[in-house]
Image 1 (tube, rainbow, N blue to C red):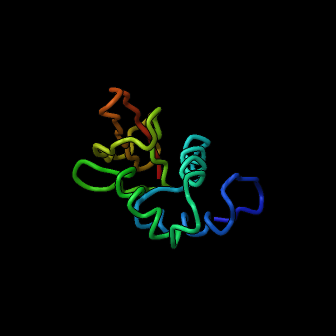
Image 2 (image 1 turned 90 degrees about the vertical axis):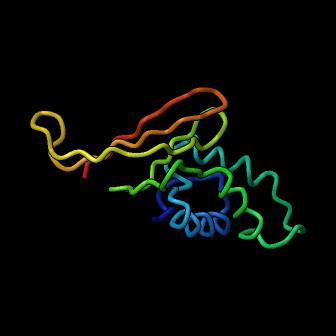
Length: 127
């Protein structure tokens, strides 16, 4: 993903690390304003004197990008839902065949939930 065409509050050296880790944890740090804000808030707590950024952020990612059984199998770029308390728990996905008048191609519906607030969100991607 090229960051040349827009501005982000995430410093470029941290962004490159987050983009790499996003492949492992199934997120894109720039997929939404809410996702970017989540990472900006995390970065505000990082003190370079505490050690390597990748080692510092990895446990945060493990706690933040959780799933019930398996991670999302995105058919487009990751669009992990973010709620009031940060990235939401991924419950699962429903894969759909094309439906005339609804989906022109294969689609997936991704279901997210925040156990602490009861908030729910769905993301739909069409291949």
